Image (spheres, rainbow, N blue to C red):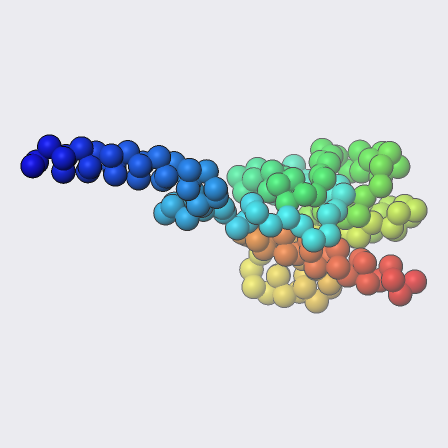
Length: 175
């Protein structure tokens, strides 16, 4: 009497294990707790940008950007990014390739505005400010339409770049 029940239970257990493995192969594995798709990696950039980045080595920004995995996150979102180590190399890079955005420290903006404006592709200058006080951040936002703040979250960086690209697109449509 116990033997048929044991055989039946064993058979049903094997069938259940067989069906469970097929169910996980159909995409149900994403429903298992802790194994979902991370939203920040699943969503790419709406406006993919070619970005040239110059961060003054004396400003502390390069170290902050490395700690925040800035370049890696931009590449994951679908942007292409090129970093240059000095102001002199910015002119060379702008002549060699077409860029949509040029990310520079807010202190370097005045020195680079004329250079970037002279390039045929007319890239948008996007300032980044490191550890700003509330007043410094507000002053930068009044002076520039889009401002990146460091340290910040991955989503904040990507949102500012999306805003800058959207503004670039609307200004190009007006012309």
